[in-house]
Image (cartoon, rainbow, N blue to C red; front, side, top):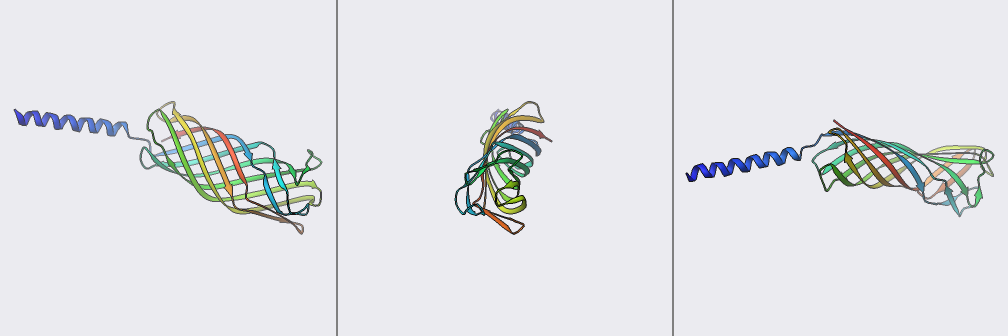
Length: 215
């Protein structure tokens, strides 16, 4: 009798463990598509034909990213992320740029390895992440005083990122959510036609809507 009761208890415990294990299972691979607004902080100028001080100020722009991720456990994942960030430049050292007559744009192309922590596993999933990698920063201007009629160059820098957000499970393979991203780089050095332009690293804040497909 005692043996039968013991086997019943053990069997029940094993069934509960199996059910819990099934509840904690996740799809291993996923793709994220993130799109939203990008707002860089003012960037300090180190070397410029306009003067070696002051700031670059930006207009609000756009960020879009594609992530490929792998869930090691329900709580930890790793991602490879690439994307593009575009911002028009409002002014360089208080020289305001005015539309087609005088304009400048900064395009950032980050490539990052992200590490994700998800404290909760369920339909609603908040998460935190950090990432490191590199960035190609493409600076393009036209008719900016002392830069000449055309100034274009690409600079490659170290990049780092922190992000936070949440996802909500719509179906077994689709999640929707919101993400905040903080992206920073090391200093930039652009040159074209004998002109050099150096700045501090860029810091860009982004708020994005996210679409996730798990498989």
